[in-house]
Image (cartoon, rainbow, N blue to C red):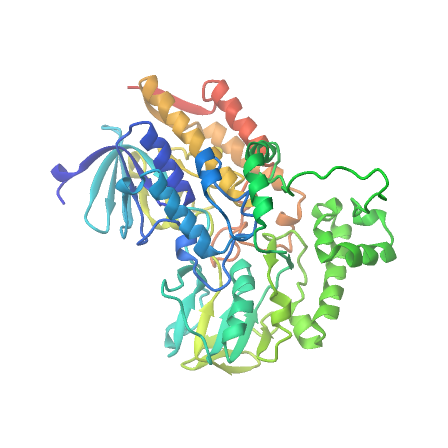
Length: 549
């Protein structure tokens, strides 16, 4: 396609997951000429790509659903408390159809370049299909967990069996019946996939280097009466979410009238350091192992955290009933809350099965992939299918792999070589009119991410409306404001278990070889963050430079 054939637009949106769909709707409603570009053959983003067995929401779906449409809230009926991938993908397709969004979405198309022309104040976006788009605004809605991460194993391409990654599971599914399967990784995808694969496979070997603290999800079929009441209460649910720093209200349904004669229900203690060893064990017996996540001092007090970790390992030893498996599954040498909270359905129960084994890679590292399996320091393992559940190059992976060039032809990945630099997770210096939905430096993945997505999309939409209405040509952060925000994000994470010296996680980028260590999300909370965003706007977009046409 030649330059003269370029399609002129107001905005290009990259990605049609939850963020891309809502961004498309907002700009569509505003009457803007837009194009949304999607690499997949369907909409849904992470819920399109992640089709592995057991994939599901890790929040109650009532709260992990769009809030922008009362009609959508009322017409959609969920079948589970924590809905599975197929149902969420169906919901997102319904959303695309319900609001006539498909007309602006081009599927099976990858963006290759996004280059800013300062003289013309235009972004030129090209795709692998030969499309060329020229737009005033470029919006990345590519998601925080999008770019699959593969471990750099020696001879990785020599394996002769089938290879899959949980983040790119075949659309038609995989029949693992009677197969010998190996799965590498133990984050959310591994924790969700292992119990389901164990039901099919003849043999399942889990290779784990950093086993996680995971807690029962308590998923269940959706009670129709509960759903009906939630539909009545949606406005209150959303208001409570807005007033919570995680974007979660823990909706439990209608409040039941108090029985004046009933004895008060026992509640867990607030701090683990305030109770005796006997009381700690009793609270686990009374409230389940999930109670360890409720003690507030475990988030910032190293001694309290280690007590919780020890109790967790003791619980695991008792539950598994197999010393080798329990030891290999036990998290060690890093604190509880270091990594993204993982919830599970029958995860540890799967390891009680005779056909499921575990290889502890902490003292038995993988040396190489062979034609028939894996070779570790202590032995060789043969299998028919290799599954990578090794997560993502989170938050920055997709954006840094694109040829995004701003003012003076500067490459975005070069400006982020020592870690992402953004103001409020929305924009970067040197890239005018270039926005990122839930970018580094915003709450995003340490919150109810859909709640954060809606807030970001609405801010970007309102910002663009302000620029158009006031004949503003460009918006871009000031360097001082960006530097101050990055420091602010770092300060918010200081002293938490997420940045402890022994903690390694994708929040810090340490799951990807060569990626600079640095905490990427903003921990102060969604309510605080929204207030800060609103404050910036009320002060005339303080920290941004706005230039008139």
